[in-house]
Image 1 (cartoon, rainbow, N blue to C red):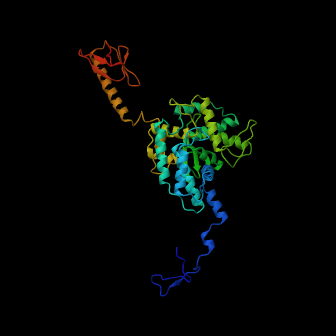
Image 2: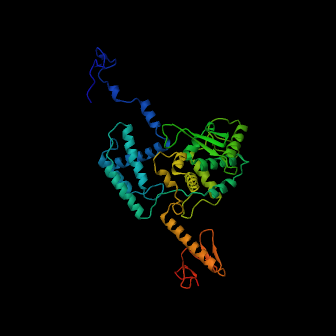
Amino acid sequence: MDQPSEGLSVALPGARSALAVPGAGPWTDADHHLTPATREALVVAVPENTRRAYRNWWSQADQWCRANGRTTLPMTTATLTEWVHHLTETVSERTGKPYAASSLDQAVAAIQSMHKIARQPKPDADDARTLIRAHGKRLADAGRTTKKSAIVTDDQALDVAERIDPSTLTGARDRLLCALSYAAWTRRSELAALNLSDAWTTSSPKGVAVRFRSSKTDQAGKGAELFLPATGDALCPHAALTAWRTLLAERGVTEGRLLRKVDRWGNVSAELHPGSVNDISKKLVGAAGHATDERGRTFTSHGWRASGRSAARAAGASSQAADEHGRWKPGSKAGEGYERDRGGLADNPMSKVAASRRRRTRQLAAEQGAADTTRPVETTEDGFVIVNDQRSDGQGRLGSDGQLALILPGGAPAE
């Protein structure tokens, strides 16, 4: 870039003479460098969880580069590609399994982010990402799927809350943790970051207002405010918040974090770590017998978020309203991935075919029932038809004698 000329003047439209701009002159060495304080501020601006992950990946990259006679900073495109190839053939020390493709995407992001902070040219990542995509396909072909939390149904979530004793300090906190997690669809970091001043009860309509000062998708801290209606049961946010705040106030706690660690002697700490939100959630759901679902997935605190959205969508909430409530980015499709238990019920194309088939069967059964009242015809709640104590899977037809024939498993018609 060319040096700015000294004595800079600017001609403005309508002005009789050029306007001299003060401060114009050649650059100094300071113009090309950041102070240590500014560099530190840029580092701190990145969320702690992201910084921790990036430090881990950078350390791994540095160790590998030193062992293989390569330079970590600045890293060349060839070195980045070779390191990623090494990672695709490496087993994670933490899991004992090959790294997931998403983990390798984070590794590449870590390298590029560290170069940006150091004001060094970033290595091109196209070849590295090609290797990552191929690695992801191999994992998928081998049966490796994206790890997701199990969810709880609305009845199961209520069951979890009903098993908690709200008369104890720990129980009151856990009731609130469940109520807010399920109703506000919180990330564990959001829940742990709430202050007492961020949640308050409302009387008209009765419920709780929650203010999220920032979130994963709101790093600038614009904030979002939610209303959670009172439900009058064990999952009621209004009752849970009132009980917890009362117990804290009795101990002189009126400001600071909303959720806090409680030790075995009833001592209240200053905060509750996001990891503890996950541990408590898993313990409570497991105690109620809902730790795993029918596909073997295990419940984690993120399951509250998926559970709340799935229940709301099943109850008729629009996708747009769900995205806004869950604080997903506008226009993002990420929220739809949380509705993982709805596919076979609401929008699945073959579910509509099955529903149409059941309607035809019920119509045939009704016609047969009107023609011959001596043959008992019954339609169950799940849409099956029973004739002469035989249960149909929804496939029905009229036989040659005009009687309703039911197709039983194996293709044999009911006699």
